[in-house]
Image (cartoon, rainbow, N blue to C red):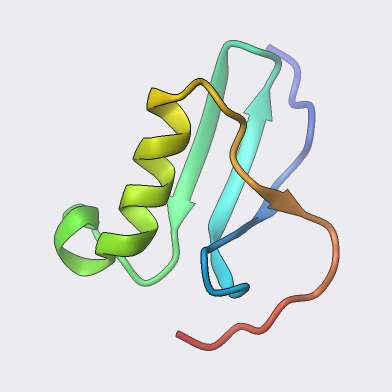
Length: 72
């Protein structure tokens, strides 16, 4: 598989860095949620809902190219 977007910044609902993602074509997206361990819905409920909603509705993750705020 070829990496399409590299390691891109994901935009969370508050215009802050929500995590990072790497897309491999249309087959696979590897996403890391910022500030969460293996219990993402418990540690970062709003970010995990955003990630899950994008998946369920068949949308790409909101990847940005500008520098957002890094605060929690």
